[in-house]
Amino acid sequence: MADKDKTTGMKSAYELALERLEKQGIERPREETFSDDAREKIAEARRKAEASLAELEILHKDRLKTLYDPSKRQEEEEEYLRDRRRIEDQRERKIEELRGKA
Image (cartoon, rainbow, N blue to C red):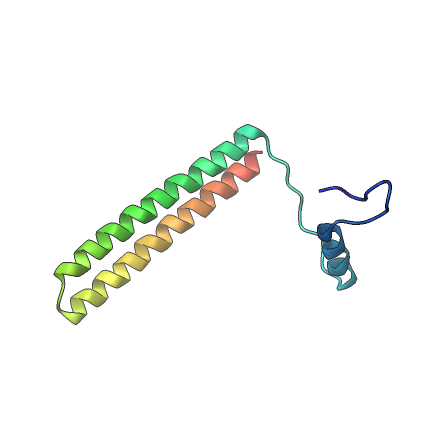
């Protein structure tokens, strides 16, 4: 984002928003700079997690089609949510690990 337009002195909406945050006593967000390689690794970690989540959801919906007992459906739903959280947590840990290396 451009800081200030040299000719008109206008600020971008982003800069104005950052100034409003500072006036409220809120720190500016970190401006992390990653190498292209690090960005690609982070994107790959996200893609893998999204693929795993999509596969998990498809299998979950397929299993629900065959379950008619409410207690079995509830167990399946709980297992699905547990697996989903596990995949999401793994994704976040991997991304944080990659950010730490960058």
